[in-house]
Structure formats: structure tokens, C-alpha cells
Image (tube, rainbow, N blue to C red; front, side):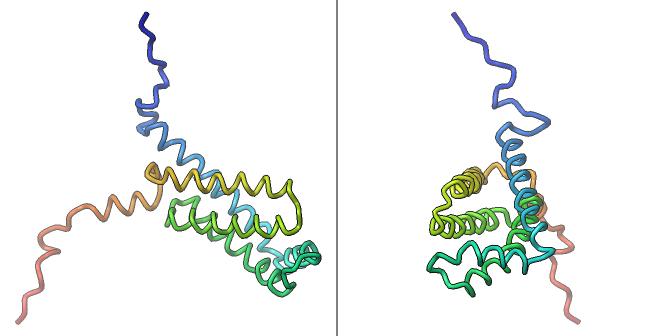
Length: 165
């Protein structure tokens, strides 16, 4: 008996996009907005956020000044990464940097033995990794737009050197 192919076959385009491209876009956009939100809510009062983190890490071997510096930088890093991911600008760099940021957060959180938070951070690390592994589907992005516009040949008049008088 012949089985029929379901109408939502992944090889068929969805709104002119493959399902993989659409899925990559939605996941990148969701992660970008999430990370942007993390940065924006903390950036308004980075000192208070830093004070909280210094208290959380008081019983670890990481020096308080290092924790404070990291905590003061984190909202700005998250904001930049969130904007880049949301736009799809320097996407691979932003994904790799975001993944490394998650590794550093996981490291610190394990020192505090906060395993519930580590579990959530592992989900973020998995999202960064999945998006990095599927970066070839990143077609709805500023990166893809730039690549497309750079690949168009320059007109003859723009290629000719200026005449020397």
C-alpha cells in the first residue's frame, strides 16, 4: 500500500521559504528578543544588578571585583548580542559569542551549586548551538541581504578606472 506524503512536507516552500529557513528565523528571532530583553531590563540600573551578583557569589572563590566587572558588562553584552541576533547581523559571531557567554554563566552558576539555573542556562546553550549548527538556513537576515547585494556585479562604468589627464 502506497503512503501519501503529508501536505506539510518539509521540501515544499512555506511563504516562499523552506520550513528549515522559517524555523531558523523564528528561533533566532525569539532568542534575540529574549537576550535583548535580558540586557535592556538590567541596563537601566547596572549597579544594582552588579550588587546582587556580588552577593550571590560571595561564598565562591571568584574575587568580588571580578564578579562586579562581569556583572557591569553583562547587560551591555546581552543588549548588543540581542540586537545582532534579532537583526541577523554578524549572526555567526553573535551566536558563538552568546554560546561562550553561556559557558561562562554556567561555570559561575555551578560554583554556586545552583543546579536549577544551570539547567535553564543549558537550554540557552543548546539554542545557541542549534542555531550555530543550522546557520546555513539564515536567509531572513541582514547578513543574507548583504551577501545577496555584494554578489551582484558592478556595472561597467563603475569598474572602469578614471582617465588620467
